[in-house]
Length: 101
Image (cartoon, rainbow, N blue to C red):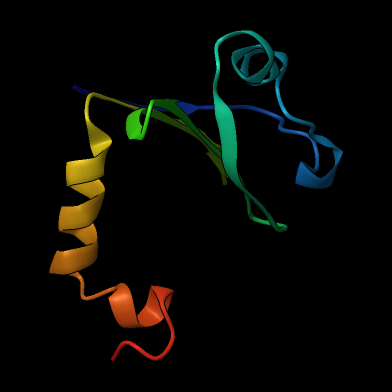
């Protein structure tokens, strides 16, 4: 299952002044989520979290602030197959694993 939303925002502070939102920190502290990536520059701020069940990535959540928009994306289900397909379809193995081209 995929849920996606884009919301207009007003008067965002400088991205350098924004910390991990409390709701995302709660997901990490209480709900077994892991922080996969954070990206920050002058124009964009992104957090990506995931949750595993054993060896399977079962959920992924992304929060992106860019320009005057808040973008939220939530993926639920067995994401291992999805990630394998993305890597294969876009021939990402040489980029992810040097020496395999």
